[in-house]
Length: 188
Image: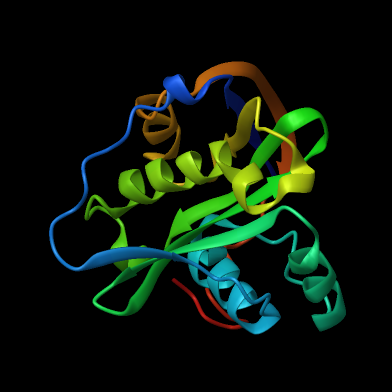
C-alpha cells in the first residue's frame, strides 16, 4: 500500500526574514552539542522522528554517524526543559553560503509547549551566523529546509510563521510504513 507524501521546500534569503517566536515559559535553554556524539545524535533522531516516520538514518553505522557529525559546518543545537532534552535542530553548511536545516523537531512529550517556535527561531539565527563559528563556510546567504506531510501537523505553519517562504512543492507516492517509534519495537 502506498501513500501520497507532499514535500514543501522553504527558504530565507536574508537574516531580516526571521520572525522570532516568543520564548516559552519555564526553564528552557538551548545549547550546542559541540562534541560530535553518534550516541546522542542517534538518540535525538529516534526520539524526535520515531513517531513521524524518520527512517533514513536508522541503518547508519557508528562510523557513518561520526563521519556525518564531524563534517565542517555541521552543528547540533538542543533544547532542554529543566535539564531534559526536549528537541533539536541540525544545521549543515553547504556550498555558496547556503545552510540547510537538515533536521528539526521535538520529542513528542514536549510538543505543544511553545518550545518548537523558540528552538526554530534560535536555530535559524545560528544558521545566519554560522560563519562566525566556521570561518571556512563563508557568510550565509540562504537558509533552507524541507518538511513533508508525514511531519507533525504544525511543522509547515511554524516555518511560515518564522519567515520562511515556499519555493517548491512536490507530491510523491511512497510505501506506507508504520512509525518505528523511538527505538526498535516501540510503538508510539
